[in-house]
Image (tube, rainbow, N blue to C red; front, side, top):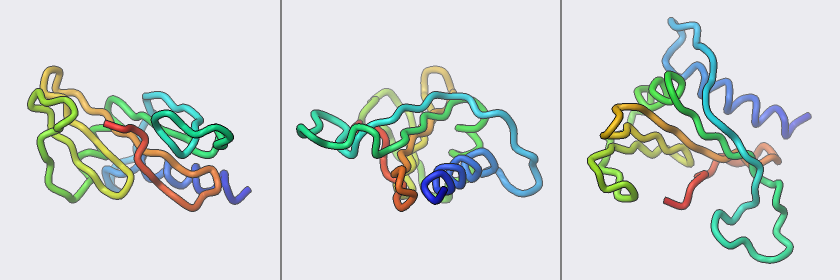
Length: 119
């Protein structure tokens, strides 16, 4: 039950990040289960230790707007896109389409929020 609480809490926060005055909305995006290591995991690593969330659309824009950190040029994309980082959460405003994407990983033990992408 505890591990599910951590995942549910993070998803709830992401869905309602735009503020208490708004009622939230549907989430769009994808998820995957994976291990701790994002690229070339070592043999024997638990391949189901992290629940990775990739938000798009209005949910990603609301989370991006709610993050109280300065946006920086996204060095991974190098195309004028802007990224904000807060803890393990990364949200990007894509320059070409003016759309938004966010990603983060929740340890299924409910104790961590980490990055979900290598770059």
